[in-house]
Length: 205
Image (cartoon, rainbow, N blue to C red; front, side, top):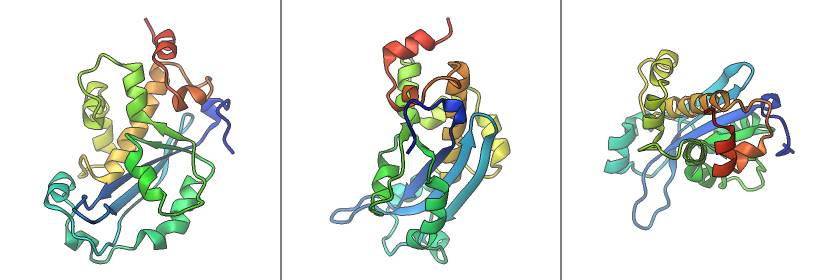
């Protein structure tokens, strides 16, 4: 079990993002793409996984317009269940990270007893660290902090709402926050439970 008292620099992080088919009346939303990228403060980005996911549920017009994933992309895609051994390997014994982690937690709950975590939410962190910003969307944050060019170099041809692009963006955002606030030698609890008063004390003048 990962302790909240663990030094951030000593930990391994797994950043995860799902894209979904979109909610429809009477049907639960389902994932159609998953990406996981590993990151740690010492070595940066590491191994990654990205895959479309098969489903018998149609992608809604709104969801398709957002992420651009079509039924043709899913035609030969594996199921999340078939990928589960690889997903479990990448997530086990790591701090999980997502930007607004509600969707990611919900989809992983389909596999009871996985015991992953703890979770870090880069959306909550950004709101605590920079409360005066006009927007906290992942795209706007990366633009504000000059991370988009690096992101495009890592994933040429991908775009926002591609799961791997978004997962990597969250990793770069977390890296920027930890570096800017000099948190590498601080306890993980600062990321798990961001508090405005604590962040103010750590923010450079």
